[in-house]
Length: 168
Image (cartoon, rainbow, N blue to C red; front, side, top):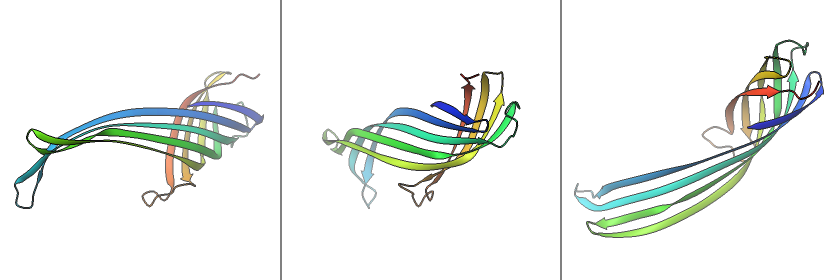
């Protein structure tokens, strides 16, 4: 994730972040379908390639709980939101039949959706030098758009990063 921020006050900063990830996975299965009598009814072959892409834009406020901004170790509370876009493309084929006489059916499915997440958490910063520091953020997110029965809309996130200050 790439993040840029602006220090409004000694203890308050605003940040804007963008992130992207993509992955492709391929699966292949060969097997037999067995009827209720335990005999081989038919053979099958399944081939699939799925590509998933995720893009996120986040806006975050960071408020330092440590009163002295020149301390090496700083603790902060975080709050903000994220717009998350996910897209999937699955394609492949399914084949059924007896040895040598397979009937193959190709398929392709596309889907995409957007989610809006609220985020709250804690951040820890350790200043390595006047310009560099290490950050560790731990947060909980609530999906406003699509909570599920599996997680009730809550998820967690953690981030470790290197920070560079441009200002004086």
